[in-house]
Length: 186
Image 1 (cartoon, rainbow, N blue to C red):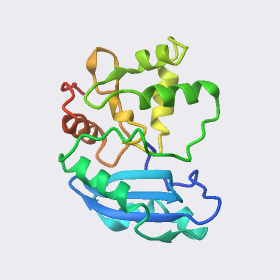
Image 2 (cartoon, rainbow, N blue to C red; image 1 turned 180 degrees about the vertical axis):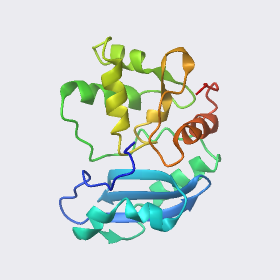
Image 3 (cartoon, rainbow, N blue to C red; image 1 turned 120 degrees about the vertical axis):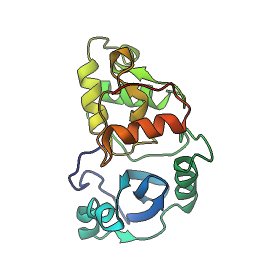
Image 4 (cartoon, helix red, strand yellow; image 1 turned 90 degrees about the vertical axis):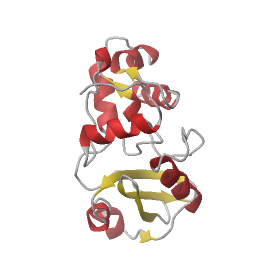
Protein backbone atom coordinates (compact mmCIF):
# COMPACT_ATOMS: atom_id res chain seq x y z
CA UNK A 1 0.00 0.00 0.00
CA UNK A 2 1.12 3.57 -0.51
CA UNK A 3 2.85 5.56 2.16
CA UNK A 4 1.31 8.67 3.67
CA UNK A 5 1.56 10.86 0.55
CA UNK A 6 -1.45 11.84 -1.51
CA UNK A 7 -2.65 9.48 -4.21
CA UNK A 8 -1.68 10.99 -7.52
CA UNK A 9 -0.89 7.89 -9.57
CA UNK A 10 -4.57 6.96 -9.75
CA UNK A 11 -5.45 9.01 -12.79
CA UNK A 12 -8.91 8.67 -14.21
CA UNK A 13 -9.61 9.04 -17.91
CA UNK A 14 -13.11 10.45 -17.68
CA UNK A 15 -15.02 10.93 -14.44
CA UNK A 16 -13.48 9.59 -11.27
CA UNK A 17 -15.44 9.33 -8.04
CA UNK A 18 -14.13 9.05 -4.51
CA UNK A 19 -16.10 7.15 -1.87
CA UNK A 20 -15.33 7.55 1.84
CA UNK A 21 -16.85 5.34 4.52
CA UNK A 22 -16.33 4.20 8.09
CA UNK A 23 -15.46 0.57 8.85
CA UNK A 24 -14.49 -1.54 11.84
CA UNK A 25 -10.81 -0.70 11.17
CA UNK A 26 -11.25 3.03 10.55
CA UNK A 27 -12.05 5.18 7.55
CA UNK A 28 -11.68 3.71 4.06
CA UNK A 29 -11.52 5.57 0.78
CA UNK A 30 -11.91 4.21 -2.73
CA UNK A 31 -11.49 5.98 -6.05
CA UNK A 32 -12.86 4.53 -9.22
CA UNK A 33 -14.23 5.14 -12.65
CA UNK A 34 -17.01 3.04 -14.07
CA UNK A 35 -16.40 -0.35 -12.46
CA UNK A 36 -12.60 0.03 -12.38
CA UNK A 37 -11.01 0.51 -8.97
CA UNK A 38 -8.11 2.97 -9.13
CA UNK A 39 -7.12 3.16 -5.46
CA UNK A 40 -8.14 2.11 -1.97
CA UNK A 41 -6.83 3.36 1.37
CA UNK A 42 -7.78 1.97 4.75
CA UNK A 43 -7.32 2.42 8.46
CA UNK A 44 -7.49 6.19 8.74
CA UNK A 45 -8.59 7.67 12.05
CA UNK A 46 -10.84 10.35 10.55
CA UNK A 47 -12.76 11.14 7.41
CA UNK A 48 -10.61 14.25 6.90
CA UNK A 49 -7.38 12.21 7.12
CA UNK A 50 -8.76 9.74 4.60
CA UNK A 51 -9.98 12.50 2.29
CA UNK A 52 -6.54 14.14 2.32
CA UNK A 53 -5.14 11.06 0.56
CA UNK A 54 -7.28 11.94 -2.47
CA UNK A 55 -6.51 15.67 -2.69
CA UNK A 56 -4.79 15.43 -6.10
CA UNK A 57 -7.69 13.50 -7.64
CA UNK A 58 -10.22 15.92 -6.21
CA UNK A 59 -8.22 18.89 -7.49
CA UNK A 60 -8.35 17.40 -10.98
CA UNK A 61 -12.14 17.15 -10.98
CA UNK A 62 -13.03 13.95 -9.15
CA UNK A 63 -16.25 14.06 -7.16
CA UNK A 64 -17.11 12.62 -3.77
CA UNK A 65 -19.85 10.08 -4.33
CA UNK A 66 -20.87 6.63 -3.18
CA UNK A 67 -18.86 5.08 -5.98
CA UNK A 68 -19.59 1.35 -6.36
CA UNK A 69 -21.90 0.74 -3.36
CA UNK A 70 -21.64 -3.03 -3.90
CA UNK A 71 -17.86 -2.99 -3.43
CA UNK A 72 -18.23 -0.61 -0.47
CA UNK A 73 -20.58 -3.09 1.21
CA UNK A 74 -18.22 -5.99 0.53
CA UNK A 75 -15.27 -4.09 2.03
CA UNK A 76 -17.32 -3.10 5.09
CA UNK A 77 -18.50 -6.68 5.65
CA UNK A 78 -14.99 -8.08 5.23
CA UNK A 79 -13.45 -5.56 7.64
CA UNK A 80 -16.21 -6.26 10.18
CA UNK A 81 -15.32 -9.96 10.07
CA UNK A 82 -18.72 -10.93 8.63
CA UNK A 83 -17.37 -12.58 5.47
CA UNK A 84 -14.04 -13.69 4.08
CA UNK A 85 -13.75 -12.14 0.62
CA UNK A 86 -10.78 -12.47 -1.72
CA UNK A 87 -11.95 -9.64 -4.03
CA UNK A 88 -10.52 -11.52 -7.03
CA UNK A 89 -13.43 -10.47 -9.23
CA UNK A 90 -12.84 -6.74 -8.67
CA UNK A 91 -11.57 -5.09 -11.84
CA UNK A 92 -8.75 -2.62 -11.36
CA UNK A 93 -7.15 0.17 -13.34
CA UNK A 94 -3.70 -0.83 -12.10
CA UNK A 95 -1.04 -1.12 -14.76
CA UNK A 96 2.46 -2.18 -13.87
CA UNK A 97 5.62 -0.76 -15.39
CA UNK A 98 7.38 -4.08 -15.98
CA UNK A 99 6.41 -7.63 -16.91
CA UNK A 100 7.94 -8.81 -13.61
CA UNK A 101 5.74 -6.43 -11.59
CA UNK A 102 2.68 -7.66 -13.50
CA UNK A 103 3.59 -11.26 -12.66
CA UNK A 104 4.06 -10.32 -8.99
CA UNK A 105 0.61 -8.69 -8.84
CA UNK A 106 -0.96 -11.73 -10.53
CA UNK A 107 0.77 -14.09 -8.08
CA UNK A 108 -0.35 -12.07 -5.06
CA UNK A 109 -3.95 -11.92 -6.31
CA UNK A 110 -3.91 -15.75 -6.44
CA UNK A 111 -2.99 -16.14 -2.75
CA UNK A 112 -6.15 -17.52 -1.12
CA UNK A 113 -7.67 -15.78 1.87
CA UNK A 114 -6.27 -17.25 5.08
CA UNK A 115 -2.94 -18.17 3.48
CA UNK A 116 0.36 -16.31 3.31
CA UNK A 117 3.39 -16.50 1.05
CA UNK A 118 6.84 -15.10 1.71
CA UNK A 119 8.35 -12.41 -0.48
CA UNK A 120 10.75 -15.12 -1.72
CA UNK A 121 7.89 -17.48 -2.62
CA UNK A 122 6.11 -14.72 -4.55
CA UNK A 123 9.37 -13.91 -6.36
CA UNK A 124 9.79 -17.58 -7.31
CA UNK A 125 6.19 -17.82 -8.54
CA UNK A 126 6.86 -14.69 -10.61
CA UNK A 127 9.88 -16.24 -12.33
CA UNK A 128 12.67 -14.50 -10.40
CA UNK A 129 13.38 -16.47 -7.21
CA UNK A 130 16.13 -14.08 -6.05
CA UNK A 131 13.98 -10.94 -6.36
CA UNK A 132 12.32 -10.94 -2.94
CA UNK A 133 13.38 -7.33 -2.27
CA UNK A 134 11.79 -6.25 -5.56
CA UNK A 135 8.57 -8.00 -4.50
CA UNK A 136 8.65 -6.01 -1.26
CA UNK A 137 9.06 -2.76 -3.19
CA UNK A 138 6.13 -3.62 -5.46
CA UNK A 139 3.98 -4.42 -2.43
CA UNK A 140 4.98 -1.12 -0.78
CA UNK A 141 3.62 0.73 -3.84
CA UNK A 142 0.33 -1.20 -3.89
CA UNK A 143 -2.48 1.32 -4.15
CA UNK A 144 -5.32 -1.16 -3.80
CA UNK A 145 -4.79 -3.30 -0.69
CA UNK A 146 -7.38 -6.01 -0.04
CA UNK A 147 -7.89 -6.36 -3.81
CA UNK A 148 -4.16 -6.88 -4.32
CA UNK A 149 -3.78 -8.56 -0.91
CA UNK A 150 -0.28 -7.42 0.03
CA UNK A 151 -1.11 -8.26 3.66
CA UNK A 152 -0.79 -11.95 2.66
CA UNK A 153 2.88 -11.48 1.76
CA UNK A 154 5.21 -11.92 4.72
CA UNK A 155 8.93 -12.05 5.39
CA UNK A 156 10.84 -15.29 5.67
CA UNK A 157 10.28 -17.37 8.77
CA UNK A 158 6.71 -16.11 9.12
CA UNK A 159 7.69 -12.61 10.25
CA UNK A 160 5.20 -9.98 9.15
CA UNK A 161 7.61 -7.80 7.20
CA UNK A 162 6.12 -4.37 6.54
CA UNK A 163 2.76 -2.75 5.85
CA UNK A 164 2.29 0.84 4.74
CA UNK A 165 -0.99 1.89 6.28
CA UNK A 166 -1.66 4.40 9.03
CA UNK A 167 -1.85 1.49 11.47
CA UNK A 168 1.17 -0.35 10.05
CA UNK A 169 1.80 -3.91 11.19
CA UNK A 170 -1.18 -3.90 13.56
CA UNK A 171 -3.40 -3.49 10.46
CA UNK A 172 -1.60 -6.31 8.65
CA UNK A 173 -2.08 -8.54 11.69
CA UNK A 174 -5.75 -7.63 11.92
CA UNK A 175 -6.37 -8.36 8.23
CA UNK A 176 -4.67 -11.75 8.53
CA UNK A 177 -6.72 -12.53 11.65
CA UNK A 178 -9.94 -11.59 9.82
CA UNK A 179 -9.04 -14.22 7.22
CA UNK A 180 -8.09 -16.83 9.81
CA UNK A 181 -4.45 -16.91 8.72
CA UNK A 182 -1.86 -18.40 11.02
CA UNK A 183 -0.56 -15.67 13.31
CA UNK A 184 2.74 -14.26 12.17
CA UNK A 185 5.25 -12.40 14.28
CA UNK A 186 6.50 -8.81 13.80
